Length: 365
Image 1 (cartoon, helix red, strand yellow):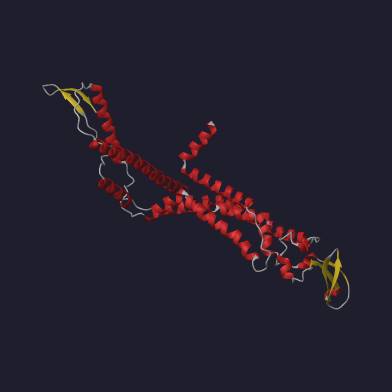
Image 2: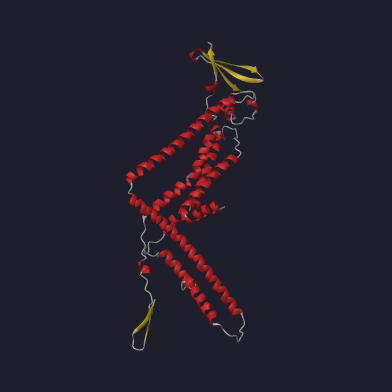
């Protein structure tokens, strides 16, 4: 339990870790969605490829925009890009860094979905089974006759014998055709293993294995390409980029995130204190005037004065709606410059006690 609390505190204190964690969770959710998704190929030539490509492309697009939506860098980047210059100049390198970080995290879940679909192969089989040449799965033997087509019933299944004059070969395709359908429609039904025309035929399994091999080869090739590209990029990046500039860009991007977070937290605290004071004032106005003659201990007065001073400090002297609106407007249109020397050398009040002759007896800040 203590380890879980430490992990949660780490993620809460680090916005970048939060974004990474959310993207990893989104990638795992994409895998879970695919495994729980019951893919049913329509097994029609005109719809197989359209439906399969839709299943392979549409969910990654949804996951990409969902990753952009939940990424905190998106809001920080847009605020920095769209804000007026005011007292603070814009740094295009910071916006570029935030955009790059946002895109990298948003692409994780879509790439996981695409790789899982390719390695599984069902969608690829549905999409490209029509494009497979049935002659690749044929038995071949010597025969010299003119081109013709005969039918023979074997185990209640009708096969097509195609006699060809090419190189004097006779090709037995093993293509089941007990329904009178043409080759394209039969190949479109390869993903449907429950179809009656493939009941006693190994032709469907052979075609499925063939297309699945291509699908997995494409999936592993994409994964290898991404890993090699990332490794090469990590290795050659220091050769072209100034590391000091990169550190500055990363620091100010983190600063923008932390600044916005602290401003939001301060606004929440101010709104809570402001609302509590408005509510107390409302109830005070509704109460009738009463006079009670009671002794007033001095410690109550001191504690009340201290509480009022603390409350005024939390309100930062803002006690009206117009003042708050003006402050928020100034924050957006004229953000403060990145200089804290005025706070570091804030003037302080020094109290000095003197005697009747003007000599200093005691001083306090």
